Every structure is written in C-alpha cells, then in structure tokens.
Image (cartoon, rainbow, N blue to C red):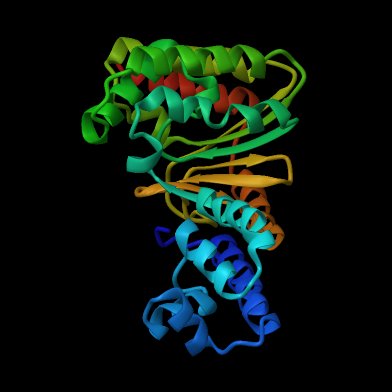
Length: 282
C-alpha cells in the first residue's frame, strides 16, 4: 500500500497488524517459526507485525494457514481491502479513465446530508458548469491519464449534480478568492462559471463564503477537502485521493473549516468579489 500522511491509514494498518499478531500467538508459534512456515524472511514478518508493511492477500492466506486460522481469511482480506481503499494513488484510481473515478464516490454523495467543502485551487465539483468541468478534467487527462473518456466523465459529474441540488442536502462552501481568478479554462468559460457560482449561492440550502486574498490572514490556506457529514473527509492530494475516517482527524478538519469560515465574506460582499473577478476577465 502506498504511504500516506494520514494517521487514519496508519492506525488502520496497525489494527490489522495487531489481529495478525494475535492469530500467531493463539497458534502458539514464534515470529521466526511463522516466517519459516510461510517461506519468507523473518524481516518481512517483523515489518507486517509493526504495521510498516501492508500484507498482500497471498500474505494473509499464508499467515492464516501457518497459524491454523483458515476461517479468518475472508474477514482479514476484507479488512486489508478496506485499509487499502483509504488512500488511492491517482494513477491507480484513474487507470481505466476519469469516468470510473467520478462514479466511485457516488455512494457517499448519495448518503450525505451536510457537505462542507473547502476549495483553494479550483471550484468545488458540485458547483462546476459543464464547460468548466470539461476544462478541468481535460487538464487532468492530459497530465496523467492515458484513457480519454473526458466527455463521459463530464456527463457523470453533471448527472451527480442534479441529484445533489434536489434540496434534500445542505452545503457549506468555502472558496479562496484565488480560485475565482485562476483556471485552466478560457475567459468565456470562466465568466460562465462565476455567474453560475453567484446563482448557486442564492439557493436556500447553500451557504457560500469567499475568503478574500490579502495579508494579515489568521489561517493559511490548506489542501482542498470535502467533509461528508461527520463520517468521512476526502482530501485531494497531489499524489492521490485520501479518505479520512478517524474521528479525531475528522474533528481536525471540522475545526479547520470553522477557522477558515471565520475569514470568509458572504452575501453581497461575496457576490462583489465574484463580480470583480468577472470584470477582470475583460
């Protein structure tokens, strides 16, 4: 499994490692004996037991066989897959194209009732116009995705937006002013996107805050993130997609959202910043 800066992933790895250690001890064998039975170097056993190395599915099968715990194999493999899903490199997530990546998050979007989103670089996907989405996804496809299914990926995101803005869910959106002025699209597309943002911000179930650019900030910008109720946070890193599920980490993001929210302007002041960005397009 790829390395990740999240303690959610670290803790989940350690929990899985602990279960494997318990199986070995219940079988009454030493780490060295388990290594011999599995046919690998003792250093590998040490790395797996410490959580430094994630066991593969064949590793889990061999470990359980060596510990005479065949009945534990399905559950442990399911647990290992859950740990693996917490952090996914973009190259893995997008290996079959961008549409699959869009559809992979549909379930949690359908379940969520309160979204809290912080965007420092690009507009949140849920409020993007079709043209802006196409420009963003085309840029991503150009940089790192071999399969070109941008049109299908755009359709998937637009379809998801229809569900999201049915009025059953609430949205707290925080957008850095920088994102109003920097884009990979042309001026006409950006103007349309900014106009759409103004319209979305007037909906009764949307709270839109714009964080002005300038000095004397109380809090620095952070990575873009999406909070799904109190259950999960999705963080878009340069290297991959991170799912945060540890309660104390979710609380950290909630606190960060609150702090950043305190610097945002709303209502007429927010619309003035968006309008100024439209005017600057010329």
